[in-house]
Length: 332
Ligand SMILES: C[S@@+](CC[C@H](N)C(=O)[O-])C[C@H]1O[C@@H](n2cnc3c(N)ncnc32)[C@H](O)[C@@H]1O
Image (cartoon, rainbow, N blue to C red):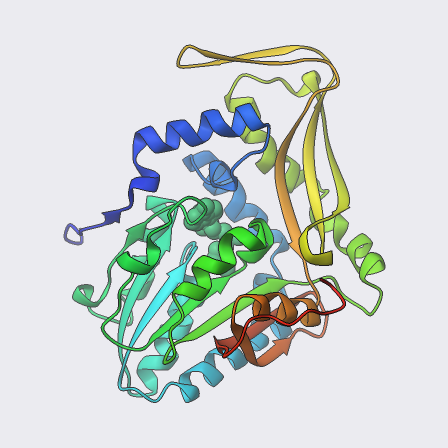
């Protein structure tokens, strides 16, 4: 068995805060996405879904797109030492591939796997230890939605490469991008990936990708949260819709529509849902490459280079700190 390790836990994931966030999610009827990754059961369902549907698992061209981004980032970083900060690292497969290339490029690499799930950061750490020594790895558990002091905690000693893979779809851009931008200093880079709506017609592209969400595996994963709280399948119906989001972008939203009354009690707090009420369980913004560039520019992040999968459904973006605030554009 491997030795014990220190994991830094941000107050945003202290039990009382998690409890508060859960109650808040039920009160506002909008779920913080972190609650889909909470239990072992949910994590397993998500991993099965990822294995079955993720383009990085099933599309060699999509994997090649990431590889190109990793190589470009490695070539771009001139310093001998680099701090990789993996935000929402998941199991750390992508970050580890990047760490390997950085090491092969002669860099001394330090890694901070950061995720809301302790299991995920430990899994990412384990993967990374194939590449770097344990004393170069600093697992960090935090909720990126609510933590507002990341800039003071994630202080790096060397130029850093922040990764943010597959995360932007599940965050309100105006909530997460200022935090992301605050972590990218003048000598730092950001490697960012986004699921995209394919093709020139944005609305048609959104319709094309809808079955990637509205399918039995995703339904099963998303319903786990409600079922674990005592909701029954026959209480209502999970529905997926495409709707307009911030800055002229579109997103897929999943809501459970109650068809009969349901009462939930959590630590003496009671939540009542009536026939016709809904709870938003999930959303996923899908951008286009132009929209990604314009969105990042609003937060002083400039896309240096980008690689788009042939399917048009996923893109990797190498970004740096821009010199000015985002321009007004067609999507404002
Ligand atoms: C779609 S997965 C992406 C994982 C990985 N970056 C990849 O590309 O394979 C989303 C990850 O974000 C984490 N996550 C969800 N909400 C989060 C939050 N509010 N703060 C930090 N991590 C979060 C989940 O635990 C999960 O590991």
